[in-house]
Structures are given as C-alpha cells and as structure tokens.
Image 1 (tube, rainbow, N blue to C red):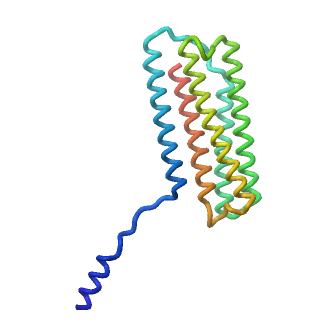
Image 2: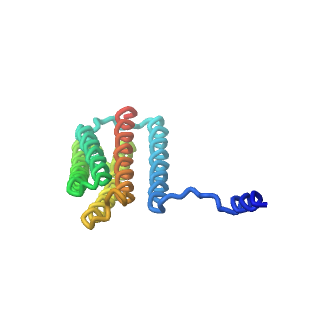
Image 3: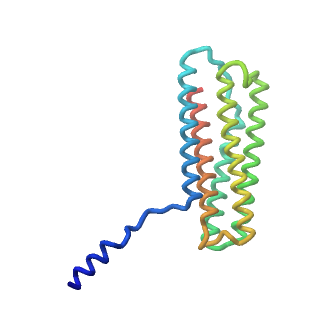
Length: 196
C-alpha cells in the first residue's frame, strides 16, 4: 500500500518544463529574423548578379579595417561578460564603454566607406551592384545602432549594480547580440569580397 501511495505521488508531480528568460527568447527570435533577412538578400544578390549588367568597382579598403575594429569590440564585450561573472565592476563598466566606443568608430568607418563609394561613382540609385552594397552595409549599420542601444542599457544597469555574478541576464543578452552583429558583418564582408 505504501509503495502504491509513493507511485501515485510521483505520478502526480508535474514534469519540469524547459524555460528561458523571456528577453533572451525575444533576442533569439530577433536574431533568427535578421538571419532570414540577410539570407534572402544575399540570395537575391547572387541571382541579380548572374543576370548581368553588373557594375564592377573596388570595395572600399576601410571596410577591411572596420572589420578589425568590430572584432576588437567583440573582445572587449567578452571582457565585460567575464568581468561581470567575477564581480569586477570597474572592469565591467570600462569594457562596455570601450565596446560602445569601438561600435561608434565602426559606424564612422562605414560612413567613410560610403564616401569612398560615392567618389568611385557608386551610388544607391543606379546599378544594382551599388544598391546592394548600400543596403547590406546600411541595414547592418542600423542593427549595430540597435546594438549600441542595448549596450547603453547594459552600461546603465552596471552603474546601478544590477549586473553581477548572480544577475547576468542583461550582460548575456548584450554580449550575445553584439557577437552576433560581429559575425554577421564578417559574413557580409567576406560574401561581398568573394562574390563581388
């Protein structure tokens, strides 16, 4: 009888469900939607390029240097995450601030790349080769601006001591999104260099 009661009690216990922080879930949905947008755009690029009437031009060298800047910003973002895990608050704030500054430098370099494109007579309107370049880089820049906003919130939370070893959600979200933006840019850059 006692074994039967224990079996019934075990059977009635609800199964443990998998759970995820709602903000992290939204972030991953957002990342998947961005991936789908850029996958569709790179496919459209390849199809349109194969049709001919494609303007040949040099990809601005500054895009290569801006890639290095973005890679450095991923390193400082990881430094911020590690600092949060170890409750090194000064290093956390410093690392997020440097990441933010490198993000601004990257955006400035992207703008300078557009200036170089204009100097090469590559415009948004005209040949689709130029249009795709501006759309790819512009859409990535837009998402990078949203990443900078996420960094501002993470920095604000770190100043309020809301980011620490026992509360890592905010910095994990910021780091995941920032690293994703870095990987996305590297994909776009190598795609444009290879299929240009």
